[in-house]
Image (cartoon, rainbow, N blue to C red; front, side):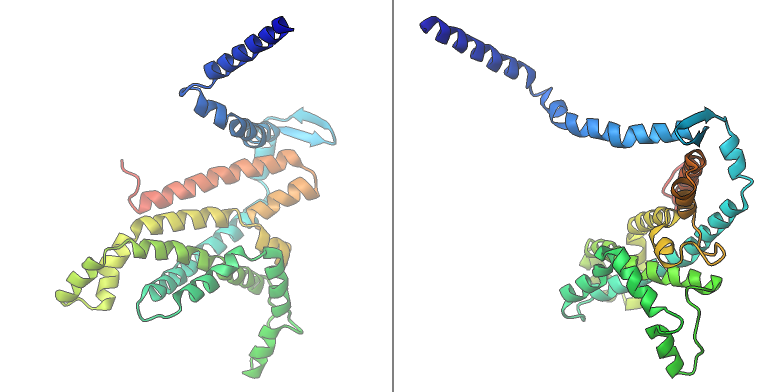
Amino acid sequence: MAQAEKIAETTANIRVKNRKYLLTPKSAPYIFIGPAFVFILIFTVYPVISSLFLSFQQVRGVEKSFVGFANYSRLFHDPIFYKSLLNTFEILIIQVPIMLFLAVLIAVGLHSSLIKAKAFFRISYFMPAITALVAASIVFMILLDEHFGLVNYLLSLVGIDSIHWLTKPFWAKVSVIVVMTWRWTGYNMVIFLAGLQNIPSELYEAASIDGAGKVKQFFMITIPLLKPVFIFTVVMSTIGTLQLFDEPFILTHGGPNSATMTITLYLYEQGFKFFDFGYASAIAYVLVLITALVSWIQMKLVGDIKE
């Protein structure tokens, strides 16, 4: 009995020593991040690499055949792809400046000492960013209904005819832009507000002593010191718009006549509606290249990248 206890104690000591040997100051970080790293490999790295190989293949059911650059060649001869690309950039060029302009104005207003109940207004403006998009889109579909919508009813009170918000190409695009602006203005407002709070108040006091008014202070102090925030919000908003999917999918399904078809929505349809996964993967990688190129150009224009 004593010998068995001694063997058990010796075995336990060996296990403790092995654990101490494995868990050293150098190995501990790798052991702790190991599970997360494995999950990243499985759910991020592997799908990216697999999608790259898939873009050079044609998928028919469970069978795959190598077709080289045929998917990419087809893509650059696809008029709907060019239409979706044009729609995406039209929304980007119009919506992002409007959204950021409103976000700056709201942030400056909420940063002012003249505004009371700031916490209430900050939460109110930020709420759309955390609202379920499906629920919000259903509300907007009801509001923008051409026959019974509240928006058309209010317009009729001032003598304006009913507008086909979701069934006419131009107004469908306007509707998508409005919903996007409503959803993301408050999100960017919070970022600008954080940037404003990091600007030293002494700069404004010195400018006031020198005779600079509020408008001049805004353009000479606030805007230059918010440059890093502008770079971040412009680049992130651009990336988000190039990946635009939810709003046109729920509101218009890419219509009418592909007027609100975006690149990501077209990718989704090719992959999960027509099950052409090879072609969808090719679209995805072209989108990645376009996003990287546009982001680099934006940073280059604002002088963030040096030669």
